[in-house]
Length: 143
Image (tube, rainbow, N blue to C red; front, side):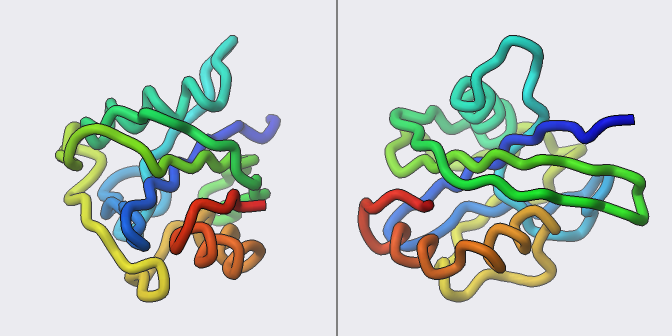
């Protein structure tokens, strides 16, 4: 078995981050940004735009490449390499498009995120916390 590639979408608006409450699969009852599996022949940016529309009904206008995280869900026997994409320009308001997967979408101040967070987001914050906060406040890329 090999690791899978996931794509996480950080939707940032006025210093707030869009998070959904997971209600299925691994990470149930945690808060997570939109995202999903990279499909064959798909660019990470295409995956981010697709997942954002499928899950939250939001159209990405501009997508930036962010960092990546190595995420091992030992209890579930899952291993992901998560590629993070950043969306600051978008059209629409978040709507729960997949009620079997997500209970709600909410905006949270980047400095005051809810708990518990999905493992991939926890890893991202552990390794890139300062650049994410700086990015949320302005337009600098997350590195």
